[in-house]
Image (tube, rainbow, N blue to C red; front, side, top):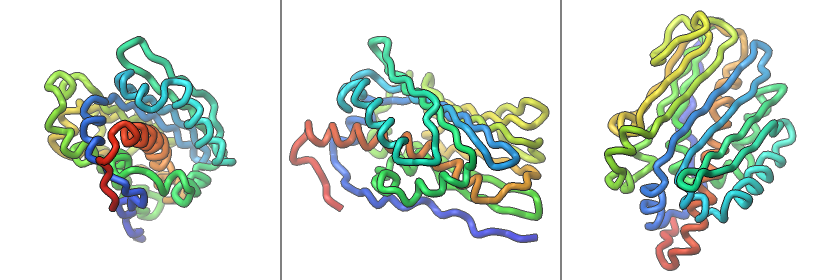
Length: 256
């Protein structure tokens, strides 16, 4: 049996923290849905959906500005295709939906070394989570730990009870083979589709852990790379919002 070293929590190189970030995140109680499909040959696609208050998107320059920034970030990744992008609002909450695909999920490893990735805020890294992926023969043992309270920081104390109850974090992964072991809240498609569904409040009380074990003959790096998709987009959104907030709250930036 061969055990590979776990992937440590990704370092946050961009550490321009500011006092105003707590206020921003408190007013930006979010819903997250990440759905990823991994094929047995390593190809993959993802649909990432984020919902935040319209006020938070306005701080980032509005719908069009946010859409432009996302397109620019994806276009820099030559092996990653942007199949769809939607930024719209209903007057109260804004929805950002991004559809991505690649012929090889391994190509997503390059995101880790890209300039955009290296500038992700610490909060984005906490939302993306810590990944541990081990190979034992043909079995892949995958664990992802998402620390929402750490991502929110002091803002966690200001989250309303209604938001703790109603805001959802949903993660879905479609495997090419049946999972032999998982802690998913729902298992579908004869064990090939795993779904984790948590309220924001539950995710704040304790880390959200997603785990599965499956016999999949693809490299361990496929699973590590797959986790970078959500980090890149959530990090981009947080970085835009933080930068906008910093310009509006002068003198409250902490250089680290």
